Length: 169
Image (cartoon, rainbow, N blue to C red; front, top):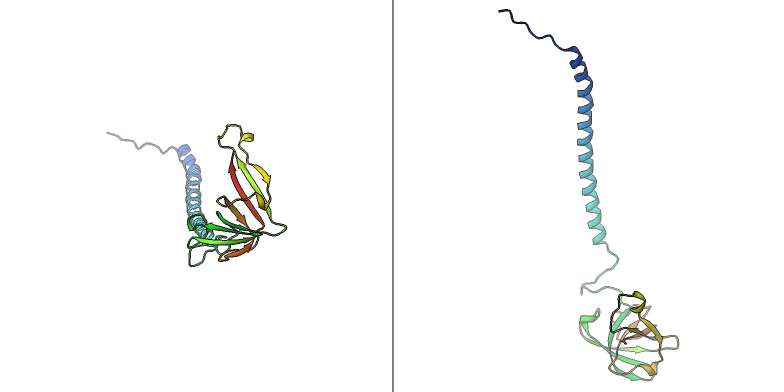
């Protein structure tokens, strides 16, 4: 028996020699891109964690912000240009319930925001209406929000820049 070895197909060998380096290059490029993506994502995640640790709201040892510009509370006393509110710790940046004394000055803005009692799907009907008030319009027992441009944290007495009464109509 005379067995002949098949003749190598030079045309297929030439194609293989051309395609194989291209495929290997492609695989190497994909592997490098995958490693680079992992490195970039891990660095980005570390940077996000750093951003969260360095947030704008700085807190003190009592877990409260270092700057407070408003309090909400129930009016307990109105005496001339002075309002006293009972501010509860659970609604304010306070460590305990407090009586706060607010000084009303000539440029203190006093207003009411009137909210509708029934909400409508039409957004123009559910917008609060702002109504200017005078100090004499405020009554004991009403809940107000008092704003100050100054840092009023730990201040039992301060000047109000804005006093807002929120009412549902």
